[in-house]
Length: 70
Image (cartoon, rainbow, N blue to C red; front, side, top):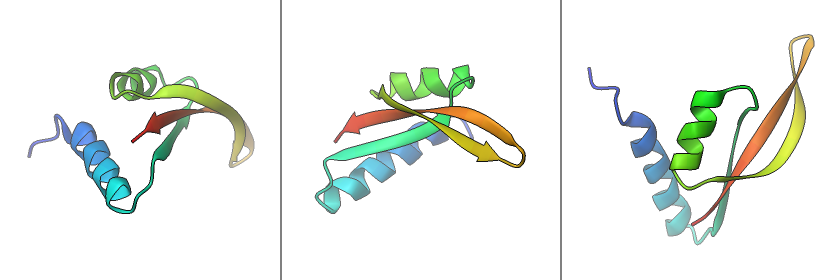
């Protein structure tokens, strides 16, 4: 089963869907401590534009939002 490149394909699919619906901006959230995800989203052209705290179970976690102009 092929998994390499699936993240890139997924983001490209979503961008195309957004374009088809005349959307011009997109934001993707990930945990601030998730360095591999942050590196990937940056490589895909995203820039950190927001931070927020979310609750998962009993814990609070910091997320960053990557903005994309599409």
